[in-house]
Figure (tube, rainbow, N blue to C red):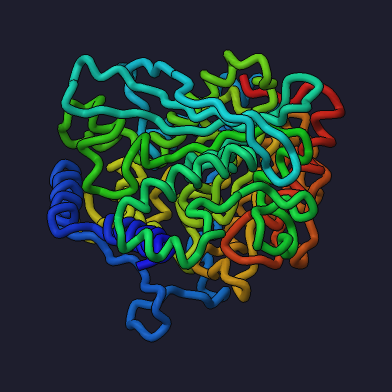
Length: 514
């Protein structure tokens, strides 16, 4: 078999193996079920309501009828204290109301970060001169080792890749991207060096007579092809120019930003079976969580903050201008990060849905019950109470949650907060409830105004708020909204995010949280 076919087959087998690895094994499914039941037992829950189905033909299909979407239309007021007094000053917000909301959100929704989380020590394992598009960069592969001396059987190494433009004139702003840590374009040997490598490979392969016969038929064949970038397209040979907007990372470095690609799964697994491992399991010494312990979203946010710890030691980075980005479940995590980690200056929150920018009280698409069942591990255990049909405390629904998504967005004030969605017809499913997320953004804007920010520029009546037309952004304030005409991604909004963030960066020091 020709060498190039062997290499291609090897690649296909690697991809197939990765796909199999992503499917939960029977043992993992059993472990997740056991963990879920353990939390139900701790809370005294006998039965949970099933979440709505995404299958329109199913008896319990999700609601997409706006006339039925708001069974609990009145949201808790972020600017009213529990005793009924109105919050009218920034000091009242910072000293009284914000801590109340943050506490309710921790206890009932996302969970608390334990006080005894071990220290993280960062090391650079590889530094490479690379290109992102046509921009030369320095790429560093980072590992953040969490001290596991107190429980050595669980090891946590946070995986991240930092990329900084080479020609920056000073410390650069950086966007931390929840996704997959990977070098953007590992540097390749020069032409003469590659010829030398290929000659050595051909000599080694020719030791097998059957392979030598093949190589003799193709004397010009090079086992390793050049991956040098095409100077006109900024891509590897044989690949066409980018259709539409370049990838997010290309846009960032071309605009003078750096970025860090962060692997959330290296912090905490994205499944219930992993709740007794990862950073949550390490802190709990392999035991199950308590009802107010942190879930995966809060753990991922904690990991992003540890990356920021590292960036604060890097003189190439403007640590006062570091943002967080994510899409879908990672959009939820990005919003939680911005809300709870005050050193982050900005966030691009993509298609975050239930558990993110979508109102819990909305009956449209994904619901609270969706997260008290399958994705319960994203949240605090206490969140399961609001999907309980039969429990020692009775029946609870989304109406009983003391906070909602607009409060989470309000916790981000006065920092730059860009809420992004796509178009259902293009693949950003109605399940995410774009309208409910817009309503939450509108309901949060009084807090941004109170703290001296410009808001969306629309009335505060969230129950009658109508999303602006697709591709029409509300980008004049520190709180921003834009629905693009693409699918389940925030890439079409990146250029608008950069233009918006650069405007505020140029205006002076960015707003900070106290």
